[in-house]
Structures are given as structure tokens and as C-alpha cells.
Length: 157
Length: 66
Image 1 (cartoon, rainbow over the protein chains, first blue to last red):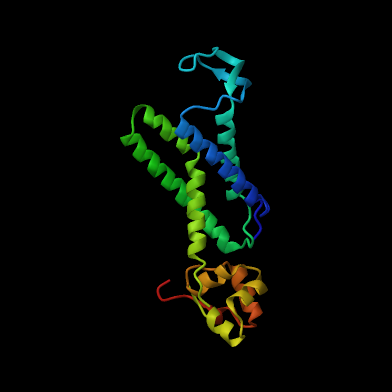
Image 2: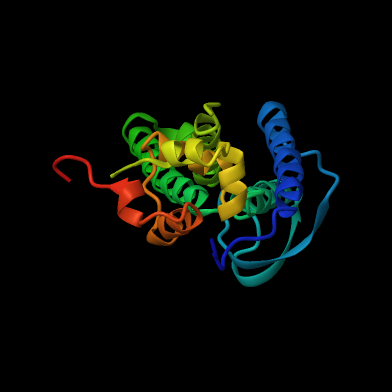
């Protein structure tokens, strides 16, 4: 099966390592509630509006920021993309179908959860929902795809 | 669509894994086709027919009111 958007199989392991590192960091931030404050550096901000964080207002400013959470988010997203978009050991048309079905399922399920959260979750908790929602499409896809894969592996000769 | 892959496989004394390796798919794909859970592409169906040296219609056929 020829597909032009899939990475070689070896990226899968790299993806899992990055993804799990990111997830560990994310859970750490979630439990501790603040960033470790060891990675504060100057970063370029395309647009900043003062308010909650009280930083300089305007376009293209250099501001100081702890980049721990940014690294965590990037690790989860890039790791997740590597997992999702790397080839299986045997990449054939059946896997292609599972991949497509899982994509549709993950997108629908993600928005179903989001709609539920919009209706029933309010105030600052909803901010958490938005944060989780950055990663859930990838996570739901990975869960669904692997579930379908394992289900199709039932031994019957 | 139904198929007689399992019968053909038995006639040629092949396991699911043997057939999978010969036509370049995974064993799960063969398994899913035999359980009628997956309808193969025309290319894959032709490959299977060619391997068993049998006309396509004798392995793959429509089921009832399709």
C-alpha cells in the first residue's frame, strides 16, 4: 500500500519515547500545579495582551517565560504525530482502512466530548478542558487504532 | 461480498501466514477477509485469484441482496 504521508516504522519507537516523556511532564505540571522554574528564558511573543500574566502588551515583543510547559506540549504533540503517522511493520490496505476508520472515530469522539464539556463544564475548569483538548484527538486516535488492531489479531487459522 | 479464500487455502495447503507473505499483506488482513469483515481492493482480490490460478468469480462472489 503506497501512502505518501507516512514515516518509516522506526519513528514509532521514537514517537512513543517522546510522547511518554511529554505525558510524564504534563502529569507532573497537573499534580504540582506550577512549573519547576528552571527553564526561564527570553522568548519571542508574536502578540501579547496584558491581563492575567501582566506582561508587556503588543506585537513581536521579547518576554521572559518558563518554557517547561511549552516543551511538554511539543513533546506530546510531536511524539503523538510520530506514533500516528509512522508505518506499521506490514503496512497494507487493511491497516490503511483501520487508520482511516480510527481517524473518523477519533474526530467524532473528540468533538462529542468537547460538546459535552461546553454544555456541562464552566469557568476555570473549562480552561483545563481546552488544554486537554489540544492532545485528545491524537490520544483518542492512538487508543482506537490499537484497539482495532488488537481486535483483528484474534487467532484463527 | 463473500469469499472462498479459506477453501482455496486448504486446497493449496497454505496457512494464513503463508498466503499473507505471498501476496504481501499481514496475516490479520487474510483473517479479516476470511471472516468477511474486510472487503479487499480489486488489486488484492486479483492477486489472490492469480496466486490460486482460479478465476476471480470463483473465489469472490456477491452475497444475497448486495
